[in-house]
Image 1 (cartoon, rainbow, N blue to C red):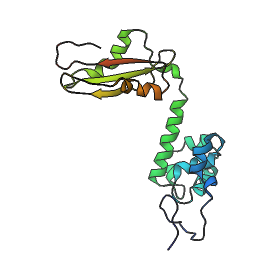
Image 2 (cartoon, helix red, strand yellow):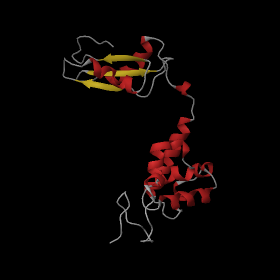
Image 3 (cartoon, rainbow, N blue to C red):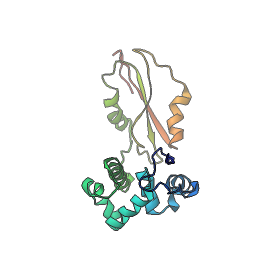
Length: 192
């Protein structure tokens, strides 16, 4: 019986190929010092499966650079031996996330007044048949950090929430401020 890799796959063509020591495996290196990893190691961690380093090396050689890889389409990526639809899709998704991270943060919505918060949160809370409570996380310049977070949804007319639950996401995200909003589905009053 062939030895299994740590991800459960069997070695492909070379049954005598040994596993890399833990400290040299791409996934371990990324989790301990991602900034110190080579492009090949980062790609290997994304690709996964048997012999990901060889596949990553082939990708870099085929496309000359990460920029060349970023311009590749699905068919181009899948033309590389060992790169299937799943690995190609992971690579394309990762490269798209990288592109989006390059967009300036200033494009995030800024909360300058209660009306700005209402405009953002009201579509989430309108026409709900239960009470919902959302928290909007803000940075030091009152820019919205991500999507509004649903903290709780209750019954038709009650919502019991611990104070810690309201602040949990803000603390995890290191937010400088929050906006808390909830609805009244009974129709007696609408406020945020």
